[in-house]
Length: 125
Image (cartoon, rainbow, N blue to C red; front, side, top):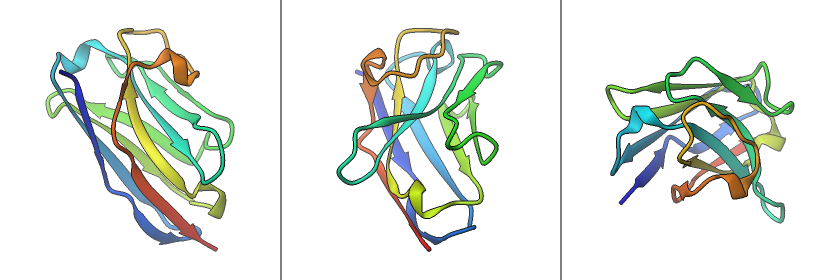
């Protein structure tokens, strides 16, 4: 059974940085794409970033490109989301996710099969 457990959320001020972590278990971590999504209050869940199984390919939404960095440590079975220059509009619950792909990076919620419980990020302006 695949489990994804996020951590690292919290309350920060605009301009601050925060690093989210997602610990994975239940299958061979380094074989699969990992991604981050977020859901703001009253809005649909949206794609943030994705990373190929070997860490060699990444993709970001336009709203976070240049500010957020997704990375993974395959020895620790953990994926990270480093968030810099945070803005009030980054306030959301952030979800770690995965699917059965190794290199294809996808942006749609329906393309991902496994989800964590989410960690809340609040950015005050």
